Image (cartoon, rainbow, N blue to C red; front, top):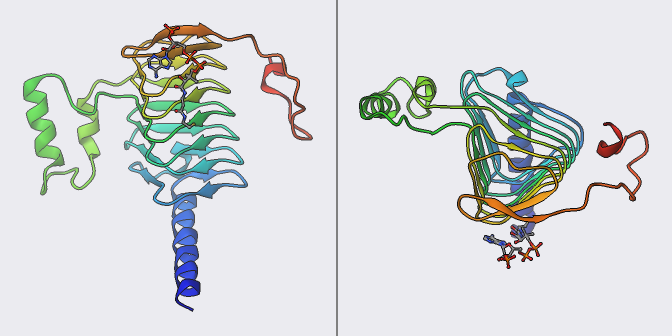
Length: 218
Ligand SMILES: CC(C)(COP(=O)(O)OP(=O)(O)OC[C@H]1O[C@@H](n2cnc3c(N)ncnc32)[C@H](O)[C@@H]1OP(=O)(O)O)[C@@H](O)C(=O)NCCC(=O)NCCS
């Protein structure tokens, strides 16, 4: 009886959180939320966060009042992953983002000491942004991130501002990516460098009916 009640409560919580995601973002069919995954859209405009179909979200998606986040289809974002867009993060199809990965298109805090003080005032209790970040986002340097189709990002990797990760690339666990990553390479380390080159994509597994393989779209 108690376990049935617990299951019911979990199910209700799941549905409530999924509904909240649909209010805060434009999401395709077959979306699945894994708690404590969530969407924080500081713009209040759901079109600023777009997610394709057949995606799983276990982490947190966050946008500033002027930021945008676009995620393709068949993407898996594991628990503890954080994607924060002060300007723009674009993610292709078939992208796997493992547990604890951070993808952040901004420095989070300004570099200049005086601006850092102002940032602290805005995010402090009683500040204009509190308990969120609000206008303090504007004080940090930022630059868009693009992650192309079929990229796999290993556990606890960090992807910094202004980076493009090419199609089919793999980012090793705990890598710190500060520069563009060439397509079909494996990068590792801090800062991440190429440790392997992968064969080019030659599709052999049929795509679902009605869908073109990404490599055939070129
Ligand atoms: C990226 C990865 C798949 C590469 O695996 P692989 O192709 O078997 O690569 P190898 O183990 O042969 O490593 C190749 C080289 O990169 C180095 N390397 C691999 N992973 C590394 C890492 N995380 N940091 C630093 N160097 C790393 C190896 O030491 C090796 O160096 P060498 O050529 O000088 O000997 C694997 O290292 C990895 O990070 N997997 C992620 C697992 C994960 O996060 N799973 C979460 C669930 S999605």
